Picture 1 (tube, rainbow, N blue to C red):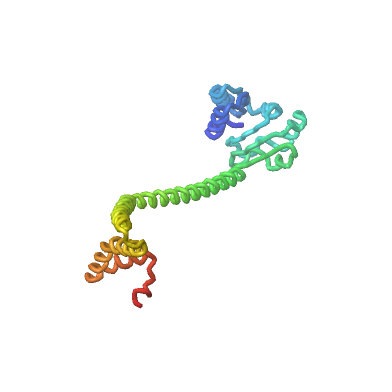
Picture 2 (tube, rainbow, N blue to C red):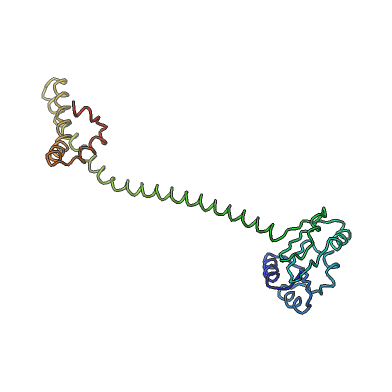
Length: 237
């Protein structure tokens, strides 16, 4: 009902969604004909409104009228002809095109701009909540990715550390096997093997820690405490 900009937008949207057989009812028939032609609909003068709504499941109104163009009596008569088949009505006009009392009819579902505003606000809040949730997920994924990237930086260091200790272990193992083959007591060989491994593994770290301590660099000492879970009270003892 109407042929202004608002109704044009609504009609084009409904047409785009596959709605067909639309009636355009307007006070100025020429304007109704132009809009109806653009959506493959039918144009009617406002005097035919009471008859046309008898065939409508959906009625959307937005005219420039100063008083309602759809009254409760008109809709009741239409619903009687329709045998009270449900009718969905949307009043987009300010002031209203549809009398508020129309909403009292059992088989009629009337919505106004205020109702739609509430729906829009609810939808907006839901979208904002979804956006906040998505933002949290993105931040979490970004944090995980950054941690993974930082972890990659340690890969080469860990590999070199493992390779170095493996080389030392193999060297000391070969030495221990030779000692056993020469007839030395197994207990003595194992004791010496353990001592040699400890000394070789800790030689470079020990030198670095002493040098750092002499230079007043405590960061390396702190890192060592974290790496090997050393209790600082044990150092003081």
